[in-house]
Image (cartoon, rainbow, N blue to C red; front, side, top):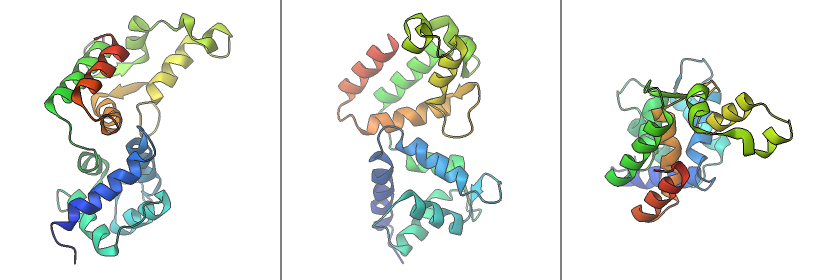
Length: 193
């Protein structure tokens, strides 16, 4: 059986496998999570989890480490992993400064303060007129705004992005940026903060 000290190593291996796929690696593993939820209960059993890890291409993790990871992710001890338990445990920890920048960006996007960013919110702050696909007639304003929202969603696409989805996306982005000052600058430039 893996020792407590080995659990973080296995977790880092899984994080590294996700982040090797870029800023949206954790998000794409979230999609894998949903695919391997065979019974549709929004939870994974140990067997579903093992199959998902294998099919996602996670290598170098022993059976004992997978069992320990499952137990780490199963924070409520139910014998299954919920999507939220999984993401909270998988995403890298952020500094307070980075969390603050994510909150500021989300607050700017969430124009109506509903706790969700919708296409209606985006219409108030994002002008699509200079978007090449809008100019060419390939996409409508609503399609461009929906495509923008889809970048942040790990699961089924809908017309809103929650703070959790936005936060998870930027946890992935954050993992590829070494210093808080660079993350701060990137967020300020991206969102006009």
